[in-house]
Length: 212
Image (cartoon, rainbow, N blue to C red; front, side):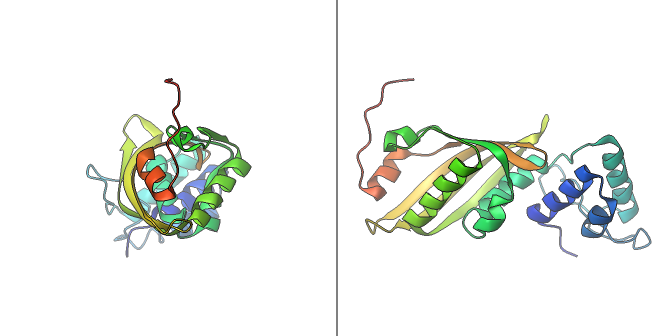
C-alpha cells in the first residue's frame, strides 16, 4: 500500500482534531487485525514514511484524540500540499488556508505589489492574479523541511517556471517559503524570491525603495 499523500494526511489530522474517530480511522489505518500496513505514520529521520503495525497507529490516533495533539508532520505536510495544489488544484488549495491567513512576500514591493496579504480574500485575489498572469506555471524539485522543535512550522526551497502571458517571456524563479499552521490549516507564510527575475519576465521596472 502506498504511503498517504500530504493532503490525505492533513484530512486525517483534521478528523483527529475534531475528535472524529470514524473519519480518522478508515482514512489512516486498516483494522488492527491486518498487521502489516503502511499507515498514516510519522516520518523517519530522512523524511520518508515508515511502516508500523496498524494497531500502534490506532493507539496513536486515540491518544491524539484524547489529548488534542497534532502529528509532528502537519506543518511540512501543509507546505508540501501548498506546493502541490496552488496551481494544479487551486480549489483544493483554498481549503488548506485559514480564513485569517497572513502571507508575507518580502520583495514584492519592488514590483509594486504589497508586502503583506491579510485574510482569505486578499490571499486568494493575489493567487488568482498570479495564475492568470503566468501560463503553465509549475513548481520544480521542492525540498520541504519540518522544524524539529515546532510541529506546526516548516520551510521549503522550490524552483518555479512558467510563461508570462502579457510579455511571452519565460519566468523562472527560486523560492524560499516559511509556513506556520493553526488548526491543521495554513495560518502564515513568508515567501522570498528574486524580484529581478520577475521584473524581467513581466517587463516591469524594479522600484527604487527605501531600505527597511
